[in-house]
Amino acid sequence: MTGFQTFYDFGSLQRFISNFKKKPSLGLVPTMGALHIGHLSLIDRAQEENDLVVVTIFVNPKQFNNPIDLENYPRVPENDLSLLRKYERVVVCMPEVIDVYPVTDPYKKVSLGLLDTVLEGEFRPGHFAGVAHVVHNLIYFIKAQRAYFGLKDIQQLSVIRHMVSETQLPVKVVPCETVRDKSGMALSSRNLLLSQDDYRDAAIIFKTLDFVKQKIKEERAEDVKKKAIELFNSGSLKLEYLELINHNSFKPYKTGDDYGACCIAAYCDGVRLIDNVLL
Image (cartoon, rainbow, N blue to C red; front, side):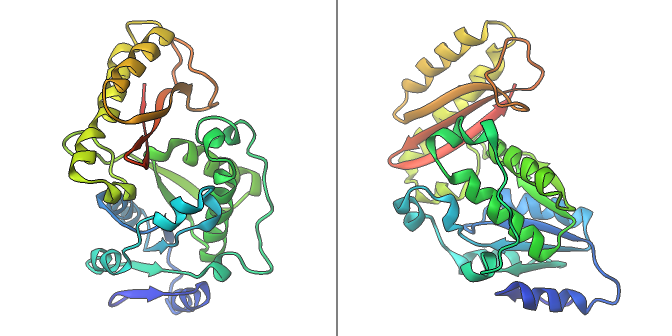
């Protein structure tokens, strides 16, 4: 492959791939744009494990239960492309809605069970149905062997794993560590919507998560949760939920669980932020 390539539909992407003398292994990094270092870390990982990496940029309307949130989602395609031009063995696909959701749609809806009713499932009804649908179709049309997702969206990762298992897509889902700045703030496209003061205030999220991680081995889970909520509320953000869960089952965390996680969703001046830490 020579030069930087951008495709606007799956057909032209597949024609490009078919021109290789030897069929390349494909890694997929699905994004909604507004790329940052966290996305680039997924691309770096994908490059290590594949001949060719496809980065998709598609703001998926099906996963927004709030029309205003969809309208306000940051879109900076020129900046995104400028970040990606430095890569070799990486191509970009920016499909239209009709390409992702064609009339003959290959996706057969799967039941998400508990994942669709707790945490993000409770507060964003329909969100994960949209996530499962779009990720299925991106993998299906691009024919990727591996797909890369950040652990920051830990519930989303579980939804995607479940969907892949149920639909028997021949793909490996690869989880990647959350990338944070020096303050501990998880990198997110939504951070572009925050002012400098908001960004500083949002540091209470990681401070609270770190508190839980430090205390959970010493005290009962219910006591740690109560103190964590008090700590969070000492800041200026509006808490939507703070929950301790088993990140395999997404049932409530029990003291001593091997697969614990603390998950937070909160609003910072109207911008919804999520984060988590494994316990």
